[in-house]
Structures are given as C-alpha cells and as structure tokens.
Image (tube, rainbow, N blue to C red):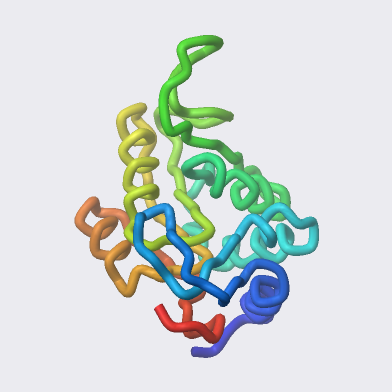
Length: 182
C-alpha cells in the first residue's frame, strides 16, 4: 500500500510511542493478543495529535459537520481533527452511559439533530464501540455518514458490522503497516 506522508508519520509515531509487542495483552473486546496499541500515547501528544488530525482529514467525507466518537479514545482524535481542519468542523463525544445531571444524555459537545457526523476511533478489534456510538448518535437524529479508524485490527469484522448498519468504514492503517500480525 502506498502511504501518504501523514500516514508515514503516523506509522513512525505509533511504532515509537504506542506499540507494545511483549504480550500477551487482553484487549477491551476480551480477545488476547501478542501486541497492544495504546493509541493515546500518540493521540494525546501534541505532535502525534497533529499527525492524527491530518490523517483523518485526508480520509473524511467532505460533507461532515462534526467528528467524534466514544469517549475517551475518540476525544483527542476529534479535537485534533477539528483544530487542523481549517474550516468549520466541530468535535463531540459519546458517553458510555447517559448522565443524570446537567444537560444529561450521552452526547457531549456541539452536535445534534441535523448534523452529519463522522465517528472516529484509535483502534478497532470488533467494531462494537463504534457501533454503539453510531446508535447513540442516530437516536438523537444525527446522520452518521462515515466511520474512520486509525488502526483496524479486526480483519474486516468491523467493516462488515458497520457496513450492515449502512456506515462505510475507512481504515487508515492495519497491523501489517505497523509490522505486527493481526
């Protein structure tokens, strides 16, 4: 695969700061793996965040008005993307559970009915977290037009799951790009 300069920078940053290969590691999906990617080591880093934002912008549907996903993994990705966009693009978060205080609900930030959202995540193994975020957004009248993941370790499962929901998934990188096996 030919990589863009931003993707090459992302590969280098992830390898240097976020990739752990001395497993086994238990993933949030419950699956055990010989490697682990702590994407936050890149997405919460100033340089890494800029790289991530630019990678998302290269893949984002131009009709998007807002970008975000399940807190906490999607938060720095969404903010970085909105900051580097150079045009009006808003970031949001989806809470795992609705809050009972304040304005309540699961959606946080400037997002609501009528928006065209792109759901993002750092790493996907099954697609369940992204599917949950999509369902929460759709329940509030937000049109989800695309999903983007930095590293897709699902071997196609996440794409099939989101595809069945009518949402195309764009994967920036795969484990092969990082030099590890799924």
